[in-house]
Amino acid sequence: MAKWLIFNFYDGDFIRQNDVIVRFETKGLARQFLDHYQKPKPTQKTKEFTVNYSYYEAPFRFVREGDYDAV
Image (cartoon, rainbow, N blue to C red; front, side):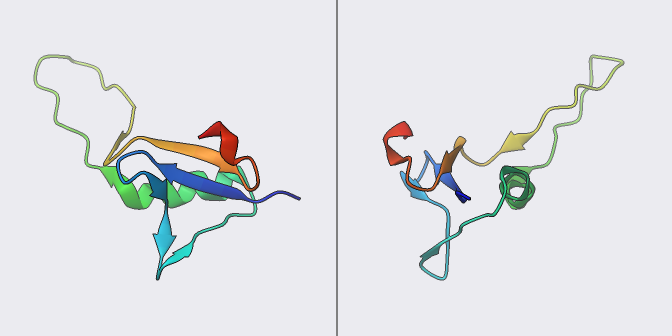
């Protein structure tokens, strides 16, 4: 089964920990890992309802291992 990688467009490289590319068994685990890069949601002052969307430090893309042409 192919593993998943996360490409960080801000750095122009895959996400690494201790100079090793982080690989995930499933895309869901990769999505959970992105919680580390989530910015706090801004407080809304004009709307009475909440918009549930996430802010991240950089744009990311999920890539299957071996499918590097997608980046």
